[in-house]
Length: 284
Ligand code: SAM
Image (cartoon, rainbow, N blue to C red; front, side, top):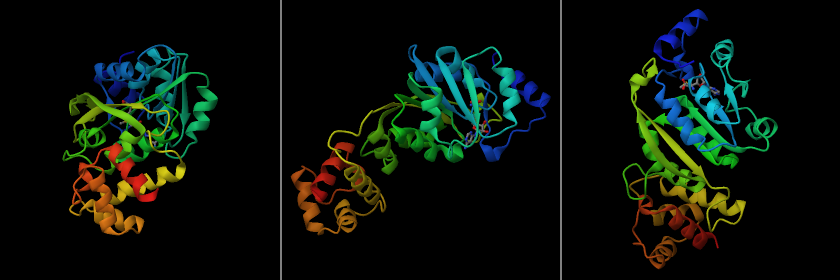
């Protein structure tokens, strides 16, 4: 059943549900957005999908049409009877009630989607976008993570070194995946329309840390470096890195020069590979 505006209103009314802003409940009422998101998350047969926040099931239905199985985690128990109705035609959807920030995601995926190639998809509640994306990426379970987020957040996720939107979170996203903005979604595609514009981002995930990161300790030092590098945007990288790693500023400047960078460079100029190289030089 397509979840257009009339149908979504009707079913929510029938169940006596008022959508809650506090849960980020802006539901998709445009059929092309769920279809395109599902096509990106599940490009071919053989996938099991974890969905976060199915709401009334608009995206869930599109995912279920393409995937072998969909497991969807929903925090709001009022949505469960709605989902039973809207997803009645599918026998490959399982709803798990709970908080996706707290539930054991590897456990759920292992027990319910075992043996399948894995993807995650969500039209995320904006107030938990960053921690949820981090949880999904850090499991390293998913080949693809396809999420709808606020447009500004999407720009930060995919930003390249040197651009205005580039920051620690951009480096973080590239560390785990190849992120790409697929398309924009206007506020009119939702009930109720949010105050912000949205974008759908696809992460094609790495199945291991990027080249050069060989241990958990190196990973920790890499993130120490990137967090320090962006902690004070006006300051030069040499001073910030020296402070974080207890090194002399001149030592960091020399390493930067040896890497072909200016000694007074700022963190926002360095790519993922350059941060990895600097981390190795400072801790090796
Ligand atoms: N996927 C639906 C759609 O596109 O129409 C609903 C999207 S709505 C933006 C976000 C959904 O996530 C809501 O149904 C909300 O109740 C649910 N949600 C909010 N916080 C959650 C959490 N921590 N864990 C699981 N679901 C959550």
